[in-house]
Picture (tube, helix red, strand yellow):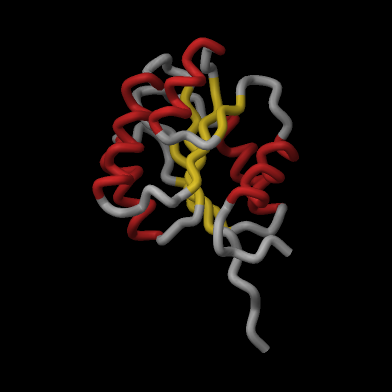
Length: 137
């Protein structure tokens, strides 16, 4: 009996930010919802994140960023994803992102930004609804 492919999500913490509680909570919620989650750990470079996304053949990437460096780090991740042909991977960002920065991040290639207070259920539902080519059963 063949099993349906599960949505594969890379959860990453870029930059110098050492607070990973939110990333771990989201990773667990995605896993509990039946997704396969790869957590890269703390202090990842954009290059490490893009490389892991390619190597792990993920459907989505969740970035948790609280350091204030989102306007530098996130566009760099988007650029790297495009350069390696993985721009179709769904990219979502969560963390301390000011309202005025959201439009620029979306223009760079982010599908959605989840600010503090977003429910894990909203994140799970967004990923399920927006990952292309994987059954969402």
